[in-house]
Length: 334
Image (tube, rainbow, N blue to C red):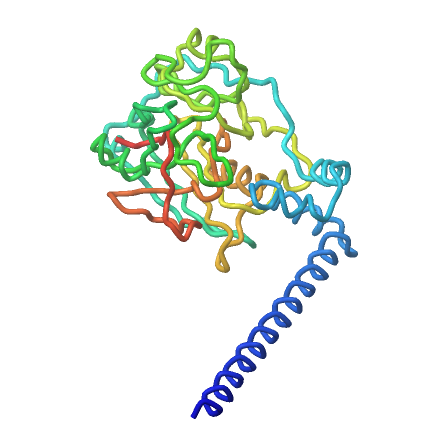
């Protein structure tokens, strides 16, 4: 009986050993295949494709670590220069006139499906810009105070719709939206950042004009900006597109805000990092904004933060398996 038990245990040990060796072999094969494939993509015959891969990965925290395993800092910088949006000193002007919105159009919200070779997304057109407001985490800046879901901001304000807005501190992709990035202005008051902080600011003034440009918080308040967040890059200013090289960036989920000359606000959310939608480049987003008449537009926080809410429901496909993320700010439509 004892011998049979020993033989059985030996067979079990051998079986587990064989399974372990099989799994290990498969893992090594997959790893080597991935490494070889990635090296071919990065150093292969198509510089355009390899540069796009680098730009895409470098826009994500995990991707940055992966790319640095394969390329030097100098090589990365050289490749990123092939797909970038340039810095602009231009700021929105002629923003003092009242928008005249026909009464029958004041409640108009149009949602359009947009798509391209590598992406799908949603474009929301809000006809009356006075309906735009900034939802803000009232406890922002405190490390123990998590941000809120965009749905929460929309619900709290009794609003109709919303998208994510400014960026936030996000160590290892685990940030909870408690610490906003840069400057945040709410109802004409500075609620995050410092007066002399120079940032890419995106916000609305008292006349409901979308103001985009690089400035200090002090400048923004002097110019009558009532609600604003920090992010970028700036894409279109005063009808002029900001110069770019290549595609302007990689393929990723995006959130963009723009405004037409008649005051209508354009809210764009692109799905990404999915089999049905890899994502959009900055050039893709600029072209969508231009197609729908934007004269001012800027990029908001993207990636796993990109979300569009309408009538209490998320209407885009968020990339995170955990669902949409908590964020410190959201642009909402009352």
